[in-house]
Structures are given as C-alpha cells and as structure tokens.
Image (cartoon, rainbow over all chains, first blue to last red):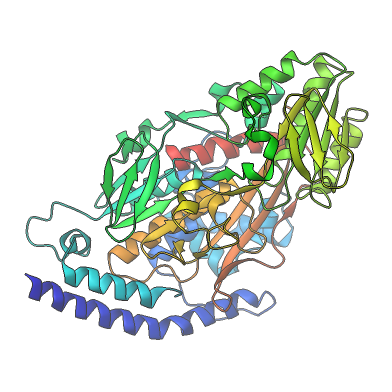
Length: 125
Length: 432
C-alpha cells in the first residue's frame, strides 16, 4: 500500500514540475493579453472548461447561481449566445445604455466575453 | 505559483507519511476500492466568503469533498442593506437568510460553534465546545474584528453596550436602531470612521444617508455628524456629498481628518488626536479593524499584524500552507474593496482552487472577477461603484482592469431596484 502511494506521489510530483515549467509562460501570455487593452485581435489561448466556469461564476452574484437569476435581474442560463454577445459588445462600445454593464463589460476582452456567454448558453434554462 | 513548491513538498511528505493519504488520494481517483471518504475541508465563518466557498466546494466536486462549515450564528444576516434597517425602511427579517439550504441542497455539514485554535501540524481545528475537527485543507473566512485597544475607554464596564458599532449585522443593528428611535428630536447622531482599510468603504456614508433620511421624516431638528479619520470620503465621494447637499442639507455635516483616539461612553464623548472633543446623543463608533481573531491568533495576519496575505490564485495563506483565508480578513490587492461581493468572489475562486489542489491539478492560472457595490442614499434610491479585477502574473496579485468599472452618474430608483436585485441574487448564490 505504502509503495503504491509512494509511486503515485512520484507521478504527481513529476506532473507538477512539468506544470510549473509551463506555468510562467502561460501566465505571461495571459498578462500580456490582458494588459494590451489596445491590442488588435490576437490569438488568445482558449480557457479550459474549469477556468471558464470560474470566469462565468463571477457573474452569478448578480445573475444568480448558474445564471438562474432571482427577480429583478436577467437570467443568462440557456440564452442565445450570439444575442448575449451582441448585447455585451453594445454595452462595451456604448451603443447600448446601461447603469453598470458598460463599465463591467470593458473589463473583459471580446474573446473572454464570447467564451463566458457560451458557458451560460450551454446551461439548462 | 507562489508557495507552490513549498506546498508540493509538504503534501509530498504528508502523503508519504500516509497520515491521511487515502482521503487526499481518494479525490484523485486513486483510492482503493472502498472509495468512501473524500478529502475533508473545514470552512470557518458563514458570511459571504465562507458560505460561498462551502457551497461551491460541494457543488463543483460533485459532492466528493466532505465540507463542514463552522458558524456560531443561527442564520446569515447581511451587512449589505443593514443600513436600511437602521433607517427604518427594512426589517431584520428582510436581511436574514437561514443556512438550511447549504445542508439540505448541498450537503454541507453545519456546526454551530466558534473556532478557537488551529493545530496546523496535526491539521485539526479546535472549537469552543471542545470538539476537534480534522481537515485536509482549512478555509478561514472570519470577517473582521475590532482593535479595541485603540480606544481605551471602550474597555470600561458597559461601554460596549452603550456605544455600538453595528458593523456586524445582527443584534447591534437592532440595538442602534432603538437608540435612534429613543433619541429626542434635536439630538445629534455621530458616526466615527476609522482610517482605511476597514470593512465596506462606502458603508459609513450610506449609514449617514439612511439615518439622515429617518431624521428628515421623524426628527427634522436632529443632526448627523460624520467624523472621518480619512482625508476625504473613501468611496463614491461626489455621489454621497451630492446626497448630503441636496437631500439632507442642514442635517448631515461631514468632518474629515478626525481620528477618534478615545471614547467616553458615559458622557457620550469622542476624543480625537488633534480636534476638540465631540459630544453627541447617539454615538456610533467603528473602531479600527483587523482580520478575525482566529486568523490573527494563528499567525496568519502577516501584514502589520492586521490582515492576512494570500496567494491570489488559491487564497492560500502565505504564512501557513494548507490554510486559506477569504473575504475581509485578507490583505487586499490594489483597488480591491473589503466587500461582501468580493468575499463571495474569493469564496468561488478558493473553492475551485482547493478542488484542483486536492485532485493534483494546477489551479486556474488567471482568476478574473468583478465587484459591484450599491449604496442607498434614501430608502429606494441607490448609487453604485463597479470594477473588474484580473490576476497579474508579474506582480502575483489581482489588479483592476484598466478602463473598466466606474460610478453611477447619479442616484436613481432604477439603481435602487438593481441594488435589491443584487442582494436577492448574491444571497441565492451564497446560500441558496
């Protein structure tokens, strides 16, 4: 049993070391993309499923858990991705007036917004 | 990445020692056939940070993690909106939510008790009742505590029953409301604000608005005196000043650079470092604050002995691997407020990271979340401040995203409706 656990640990450790090598490069890239508010469209590494869920979860505070909103705010779960994306882009550009979504949408790249609305669109309404 | 190596080494030796290898590896899918026990995570504090972490640890691990939430209070009472109870337009019931759904819907084990000590080596949390809870990872979300030693007069018998803070929503909220109701018309309500950072930057100014509104309706000859240790209003300044000038002219007076250094509860007098003492009919003193006692006692308050520094990828303490700290106890990142909304974001970030760490995966390399904070300037009109925060790998902290966020143009009923909707939704997210 101990031998098995030990072996497992070696595998885990190796995996971590591998991860820690890749990590700074990936983070550096992310920071570059993030900082580049004026950068043109670029190849942004698509977030993995769990990262995307965490990004989407930051919207639950106002739009309800899983995007199922309580009274007074808009539910996002199962809504059309293109429509949500267009709306966010309109907020971001100032074409659509808002109380605060124009301010929050500017904090995300277009790619991030597209990925996040895709997550909500895939949820059961 | 910070602390990653240390943690790996620690986990490595821990697993080799075999102390609770089965429980940790059980989650990684390597347990022997039985597969009963998942990893154990104990969460201390059922506020916006801790309750959210507990819920999402269960939900996002598909119930594989055994989660215990330690909270002394019977129900969650929201600090956001509690100023409306002081103003009389809302009741305690409106800001109170039971914890039952965390247990019933999500399988969180609720323990009504207070954490008193941590044995980080043995990975055990001791409670006031004497019970000890073992854990693989510990999450502390103990909120704030008050630095009473900064106000010597508050140590006198009865002082803390007479001069209230009402900065932890609950019995003091109601007690301060009763003091306001008992105050004769023509009286003065004085609120003393400590130097930032403190819990909820705009909260004291919102409170001034709510009390002023109550006075304007019920006691029009009365005054609200704001005595602020800071140079200026610390949040939503122009919006609050406009409310005081337009709506509460002759009621609210704002005095910056007034650092309260002592309180005489018997004579209801505030003493300052430079300015003349102020006597009022109802005193509301917000003492200087620091991380919750369990975090400070456990040596986690590495920033000036007041706040807990964390790795922003995982909310893990920089001082003690295996222990995470959330919410108001944390040494904040640049431009990050000590707010319930932010604590909820910490809770979800931490829950996802803890699951990843227990499964042997790296955590999300770029947390990205927002803050939205509404303040009510009357019973139904609100203003907001919003911001977006993203992880900066170079500085290893969360930074506000340039060009995003901002303030309301003006107070409105529409924003008031959104403010109440925000509360319903974040309560559902945290406790539903």
